[in-house]
Amino acid sequence: QVQAVESGGGLVQPGGSLRLSCVVSESLFSDYDLAWYRRTEKRQQELVADITKSGATDYVGSAKGRFTISRDNAKNTLYLQMDSLKPEDTAIYYCNIAPMSGRFWSWGQGTQVTVSS
Image 1 (cartoon, helix red, strand yellow):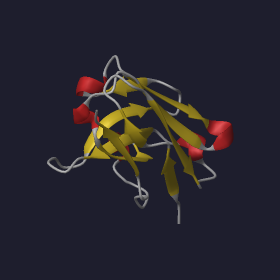
Image 2 (cartoon, one colour; image 1 turned 180 degrees about the vertical axis):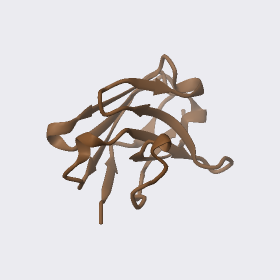
Image 3 (cartoon, rainbow, N blue to C red; image 1 turned 135 degrees about the horizontal axis):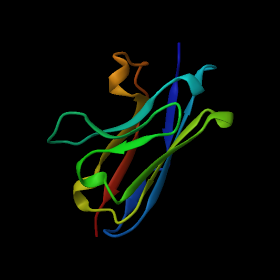
């Protein structure tokens, strides 16, 4: 069973930055389009950004211009650089297969991001 382990979250002030990492135990990691998702207390889980196996990226809503998704296939690791963080970015962040693929790995524990002064 594939496992995704997210890390890098924490408490940060508005305007600050965090870099999230997700290590995936999938030998065919490089064959997958991947994504970061987040779940807030008030909203359902939502897509934040995705990256294709060839490296093309896309961002949703307020992530545009502030977040950067990237991947290191040699390390089976997905990253999310988050800059200019806002309180509304507070959520648990997860990585998984991108939604266009139509399937998901089992969800990991996620990593909590809290943006507060």
